[in-house]
Amino acid sequence: MIISIASGKGGTGKTTISTNLALSIDQKVQLLDCDVEEPNSHLFLNPVIEKKEQVIAPVPEIDLEKCTFCKKCMDICRYGAIAVLKDKVLTFENLCHSCGGCFEVCPENAVMEKERSLGEIEQGSSRGISFIHGRLEVGQVMPPPIIKKVRSLTDPDLVTIIDAPPGTSCPVIAAMNGADFVLLVTEPTPFGLHDLKLAVETVRILDIPHGLVINRAGLGNDDVKIYAEKENIPILMEIPFDKEIARIYSNGQMVVDKLPEYKLKFQDLFRKIEQLVEKGGQNT
Amino acid sequence: MRELVILSGKGGTGKTTITAAFASLAESMIFCDADVDAADLHLILEPDFKQLSDFIGGNEAVINPDKCTQCGRCLEVCRFDAVRFDADTNTYEVDPIECEGCGVCFDLCPEQAIDFPETICGQWYISNTRFGPMVHARLGIAQENSGKLVALVRQEAREIAKDKNLDLILTDGPPGIGCPVIASIGQATAILIIAEPTVSGIHDLERVGQLSKHFNIPAMVCINKYDLNPDQTKKIEDLAKENGIAIVGRVSFDQTFTEAMIQAKTIFEYNENSQASIEIRQVWDNILSLPEFKNPVTNNIMQHL
Image 1 (cartoon, rainbow over the protein chains, first blue to last red):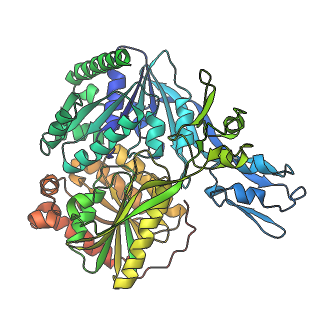
Image 2 (image 1 turned 120 degrees about the horizontal axis):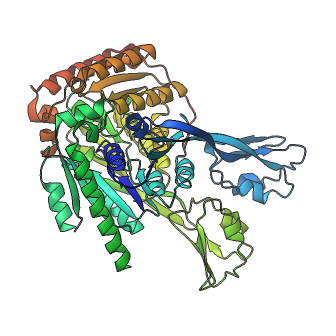
Image 3 (image 1 turned 30 degrees about the vertical axis):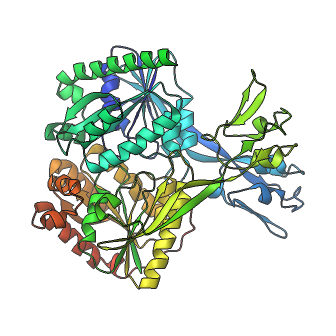
């Protein structure tokens, strides 16, 4: 089973939920941190890293001996990553989306694939959890290939928990698509509600069963609850607004270690998710 | 004309509430919401959505079943796994969510059986607020090209600032360090990083700091909720010093922010004497007197989209 933890708004508690949930359930768990721009799960789980791997993308390199300056590569590139001049060809790696059009279209086989590093993936383990995360190289612009690479390591025999990035665009889709369940995390404030609505639209487009965790409950107002009821989105857990929890988090500690009563609450959350996934399976 | 971009790396550290607070302090300013994925600044500034335009973000491949001969060339050339073959019906289809809009299948289909229409990926707006003009946008759900939309709203903001002779563009940036963030900092005067004193906050601050160095844009840091963890606050200050990032102040963990947000007010409109209000006023004064911001060096970096 794949559970993706997402939110729309950043800083609502995705990483807190992902890591504490992973540590609480009595099954073999795999945690995939797919917030590759700002991965944080490792700061709480402190995994022992056993394997590292570069994530690379092909970019063009032109063999000027073969090139006839026909400009077909420039014409097919929709990202402006190739400029064919009179007697030379310029390539702009940072604009390239690695679509492969230039390699395909060149009649002279003059476009060669060169590797560009987008970031890296690390695999390891922590306290019985199999841990994998990706990290975008600073200055690079394309998280989805790294997210896809992390997700390619999904082990179907384990419960997979995905810590997704904030937002609603391509990196979030890459971290949610194909999940059995999306757990949305929000805080009960106007910003939290506004971005929750966007996140709900996103999971509905992907047609994935979903539920809600309200973090920092009691901080703002009841509008998130009213919205969830109206939209029939089950509220699976509420974590009260508590400065002690904020402090535990700020030190990189786990809530379930410091406040053990939360372990049962996270186990309960997991049971509710399992039930909803089962029910969703019956409906389709 | 100067542009201050508010970033954080980590989401939810207070970028938007602090940007909105600055609105109450500055004169002759235009706002730009560059968090086009999950924009929130409008919830406080309440713009009038005066002018709406579609954002044509790119194109999307669509296979025309009447012309398709099932040769499979599109599936072969697509590097984004966006082409699906359904063996039951013997048809090829493009998954619009996976389609990157590169057009390679459209160009290489031997039967010209693929259409490549432009797609509207969102909307962008020019508005008025009670604090001044604002340019903002909404990227469609699950859409690509957020960087392009960010570049567009910033370009519009710059033109309006020029026309109206406004001295300052205040840009509320997106979280992360990827495509939309890089699009939000090109040619900016300075970056203000809102950091929180948590292990994640520090980790993410480091990466934004590296980004500002990579693109050679001066960075300064404001520590929000600093009293939550004084030890981590100290670490941020040490880290900033080591990396040549100016510290422009500390803001307390203050629930007044949330109370103000619920009433769609800036913290100054809600309670100008709250602890956080007093601290933010100091932060603003520090920013304005910082040499990098007072006498900016023009940056000229390539726009990465």
